[in-house]
Image (cartoon, rainbow, N blue to C red; front, side, top):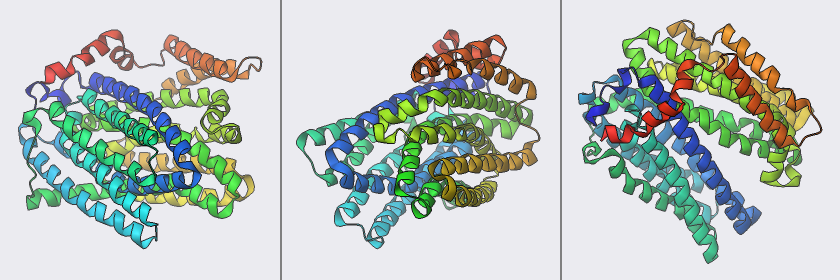
Length: 495
């Protein structure tokens, strides 16, 4: 473990590093989304509708498994490492590596078995094996990279996120140039996995590499804490896709398509609060262990950042939704803009409950997440059943927003019981409302292009918010020139 980073979670600079780390991860994610759009364009135009559908189906199936075998276990691993003294982390990391090897192997077998039982054609079964192997190789490598998150060295993690998109785009572009059929495209995921494995030693250093261990007591502890989180994330994956599944059963194909277009645009945005919550988890875990007052302060501060970002996206989407959906899907997807305009409100609730979720994990209350996610799943099913038959895709969007609002309320309820009040203050919300009111003016002007109005609204929101003190001092300082210069030195200091 890097000596210079050993006490970073309890240092006075930890909050600033979390903020800057979040910014770095978001920038890398946005760049990755851009590359992902290019990749999707190449795939869709080369494979055509039917083959593209098979490709997306397989990758979605693999994605659900990865939410358990990678995301769920990473959350637990990051939290458990943060609870330990730096000198004791290496042994636990070795057991985390061992756990990941076992889980990845079982997950791959389960994926292929499901593809066979579901009666997928042979190319999809083969594709499941290939793509599953690739993404699970990445999951194994990610277990070695977990200490970077605990040490708040998020530049390295951001680099891996971006590298995956670069290699994917290069592999897809090469296969398109060669005129390849469907199956080789699944194998690109294996190339991505090999690339991540190759750079892992460079990022963690020789001292960060470990051999897998299978100590019974440590493995039992890891699984006991990991399974509730993995189950909660799996429920989240089902919950996120439940509305469109219900729409395919109770609504028209056209309305389902409009909702699906909006959902595709939302998926790119939803990854941002998930990344930020993951960056904050080690700090929150250390605070939960040592100082509950600091934990409450951190959760409130992160909540303020979530509200600012959520309101900003909502304002921009009011006018940008339709041109954005037309650019992504063509003129036929123009009506999805109205759906996206409603559905994007859910981002505000998602950003908040992601923070509250990792706070519960930091407190060791993972099992609460199963209860809250199960109740949220039931709520969104009820809302969709009531609203979709009458209002189609827009009803589905409203159901999604209401479901996310219920889930946020449930998770906050469990967190409040554990920590006391951590909700953002009314004075802060008043300043946000004032900035939002000023930013709404360009949105009401019909004589200017939609994207121009959206840009002006964003600029006014940030500018007026700065004047009225909406942006917390710690956030402004961390993202200012001096703060970002300090961030640029982390990898050097951590060596």
